[in-house]
Image 1 (tube, rainbow, N blue to C red):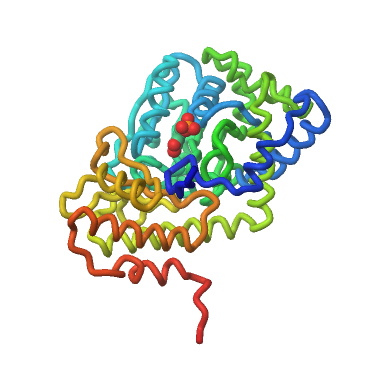
Image 2: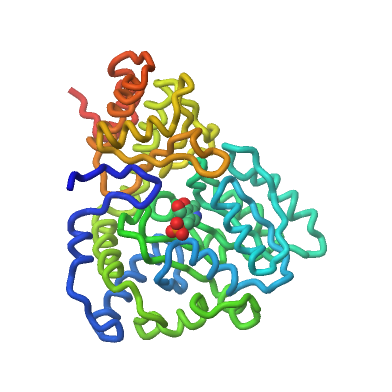
Length: 387
Ligand code: PLP
């Protein structure tokens, strides 16, 4: 089977040693070896979350972890302020509504990040402290927009609302300082910047969030974080875990740790800058506005009324590259190119050339080499060698 280069906003390319780890024989998930894997994984995840607190693993995709965050900290009738900048922010709000919360929305125009001053004003106006919680998205995968979490944390601090953060597509690629920023629950998933297969979600919880576990009346069983924490204390999960994905995540974190977190931030930022430069040189229109660009996803409308769906198909069929399409109101209108996963500078450079070729194939007159020329200084970054 030919390998497709996945430049999706997740799942992503997974390194061979990570895939091999997933193929290991299974072990007793109540045994000492498995407990060691869990301990190693959580100790490696803590600094990426920027927390000294508890981190638990859930056999789930990211959406389950968002639901877990919500139902363990809020009760039906609680007022939460949702701050969506795209599909996944709206999903967080929908989960809150499904569990009976009263959801207020701070709207942000498409392509922008949440305005910290607008958030501060909204919370200042809440003099009676009706708002119990704030829902944030670290990186909005549907629009390629990244929020300035440090600034949003400062906007929330004077109010003191519990803050839940979906960091599914930001975690590991952009800074997260959960303790310093005062966040209560932060969720992540295995299939994004950590470059493991899908199947495991990670949830970091503050001391304040843990105290809420006793009083929150959100309906829960499988996603009961108090049970997950109790099991984690013995190096276990309450229910049967996806053992192979735990092995894979352990190996992926090995690779991640050996390069270091700063290298991961630098690489994602460099790839995203290179892709933005290339797409703009080809007259694509970026969805994200300046100052709001994501490091993990570049979302853009193709030029010359070229169908985003046709471009996506051409890239896959002729060049073996999978990129994402638009979701909901952006369906069929944009392509989304991911920077996460076990990919190299050459993969990104090759993809940039392939996008240029595919546009040409679809009838757009393109000056040959224009995209890679525009991207090269961003792509080479620190690798550029003076001669
Ligand atoms: N939140 C964000 C920002 C995401 O990008 C995604 C998935 O792409 C999710 C949540 C949902 O994660 P999952 O598809 O793993 O449930």
